[in-house]
Amino acid sequence: MFELFLTLLSAFLYPFLHVANAWIFSFLEVTPHVGLIYLPAFLRLLNVLVLGKVRGTLATALGGMFLMLVFGDHSEVGFLNVLCSAAGPLLAVLVFRFYTGRDVQLQSLKDLGFVTLGYCMANAIVHHLVWMLFDPRQLVVPQQLLWMMLGDFNGALMGAYALKWAASRFNIGDPTQRS
Picture 1 (cartoon, helix red, strand yellow):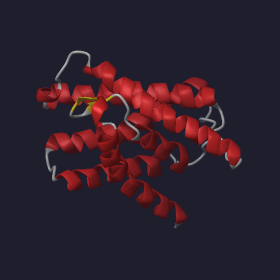
Picture 2 (picture 1 turned 180 degrees about the vertical axis):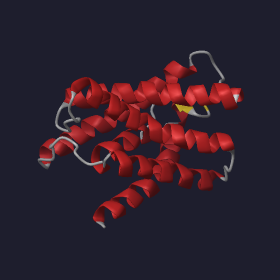
Picture 3 (picture 1 turned 90 degrees about the vertical axis):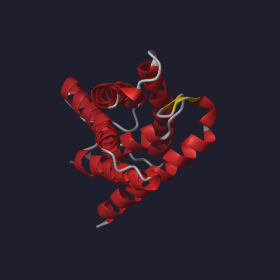
Picture 4 (picture 1 turned 120 degrees about the vertical axis):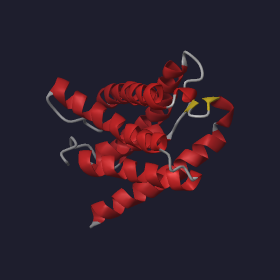
């Protein structure tokens, strides 16, 4: 029951953090969907690392659906963006597990750094593939893919350092075993 509460809490936190990030870092926006710091990137990754692959992906997807409601977006591309946002961190964690043969250790900056980098690449690539196929108008500048990776990386890395601090401070660090 507590995990359901955390899943829903994270889902509701996502649109709030998205809107707050857009307001706080509006001066670092490259395009309407790409900024140089995107803090919700870490929340997406944190969902999968802490809640597990299934519940974490679900929390991000639900949060994305709530965000669609906030903006009144009922489009196919909006829904595909939600799927991309949920898929990015899951892909990163699965690839990390495949290559290392183990789960991410929350107290390891090396693990968090690698999975963060993988997430940022996966997230930007899947979003841009969807935009190329379904809404090319969202492809504003040629270097947008790199800017998105950088913005996600900056936001996710800030969160990863905060997670590393919290994991060390509160002795949270067993490898993620949830599914």
